[in-house]
Image (cartoon, rainbow, N blue to C red):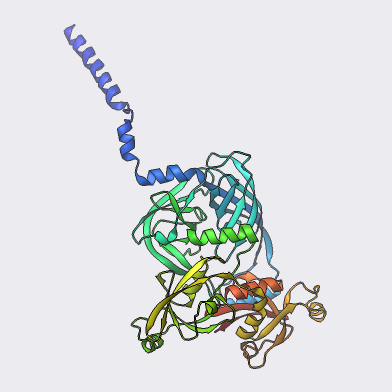
Length: 461
């Protein structure tokens, strides 16, 4: 009898211990507070403003790709591209909750006719494309908040970034839950290839993983401030992510909201890279900077006293590497902003302050004439009949200057102009705008067509 009671007592004690040890203890407030790291706080604060974006549309697909450029060009001439439905998925971030303004990547909504935005709380909105700028891979969307402000993020100052500083990348790729990755600032002012003869400069490099799912989402510091917008433009990189600095985002968003397009900033300088030989001539140890080749009349640079032969060493206190670096830095400067240049003249260093202006587009035909040696015009009646299309539906070369780069490339009147870099140009204003944007690049790649043959020609300085 006693033995049975002992067994029963042991069984009861065992069950009691199992219940006590097996039941999870409630989390103490002190424990939760201890585990709430700075990264957790950033995600809790900024996460509700990170949205999922889906856009649907149709895109042209080539029926055959061999990997050989010559063979692919042959099939492109004789086989029409197919049209297929396409859905793009990505992330975005609300920057103005009262107006429903959202920033994302241009490639996320490119070609999309039906754009949907899903918030972290699962609400879905139809979005309007306010404007996009493929050259900076940024776009602005707007949704109707319905009279109730939406969550929004705080924009920081990307000039304050420090190498080694911790960052948090947040995305909302599928509208179900956020993806969060962490890393540090590996480098700033990075330049990466985005296509043949095309580059994007001035980027933040981080080892926080950035993929197509969180492309368009924010890159934040540990104070919860947006330092950049993630972009998945360089897919071959392993363990490397890139983001567009928030200072450039501010500038692009402002122009898209106020003008519908990003206005090229103008200081009025024609520049050349500082080679090691030139650096020695100027008494510099490193070939870091740009040489002023010419200063345009009545420009901000001319008004500030900048002259031909000077060396620009730094822009707003940050050393310049080359002309491509200068152009990417200028991308964050809006017309009306103050700019400080550090100059070297006859061994003496000095600084000058300029007020940037929007590029006067009435000067662009002369820029094209001097850089390329051609004059562009809408397609005329005779050329339209040749291509079996309507007049004005494309651009053509109207005139070629003897001895110019265009003549040496064997271009002639009537050749079609299809694309500057990656941007299609079917209006004269768009052609001139793209040429102005590329004016500081050492090379400009332009796609021409004669008959059925198409050719990309690269123009150097």
